Image (cartoon, rainbow, N blue to C red; front, side):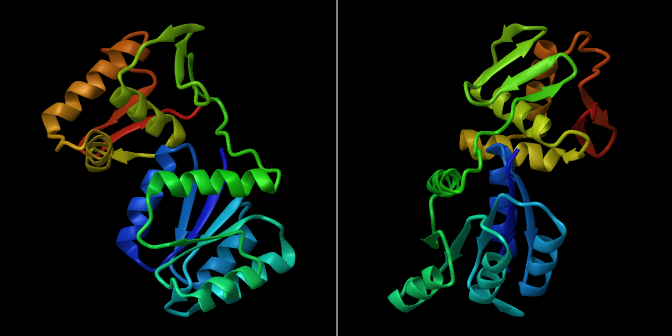
Length: 226
């Protein structure tokens, strides 16, 4: 799946945006400032950089210039600085797009995909697979042993979150927040239990002894790594 580097010093925005991007089929890595941003870029392999202008230990213009000096990956500014001078300066140092805060998450995802497409990077998430279950993210279709499994919208988003983070512990709070974000309604512990049970009933060979969606007692759940 496409790897996104988010350089943003607003911790609340970064946390929510990272979570959203991960559920949309991206793998998002967040760092706070210029020093950590450059270090992360140089040590990782990313397909797009999302970048704030005002950072505690530097500024986004400098980071963008350094990235563009050694790479052709797309860079998108996310900033509250909406004046023409900042916008022009952003494009002059090589930015591919400039998005003002606050922004609409779905529009941001569309712009990320557009920027990546222009740079020849596929923005379509790969087929996600765990054991004998596969998610075709392009069509939104889930299959088990080649046969389609019919999931509700919330069940699908929950499974997508698990498969996009295989081997990673997902807390009950994060899972509940994801369902809340999608449904717009508060999700209680008992409601989350119901959705986990329904999902296991549909994708596990033996729901009473799950082989795909494992419980980490007292902490949460995770999809197994193959």
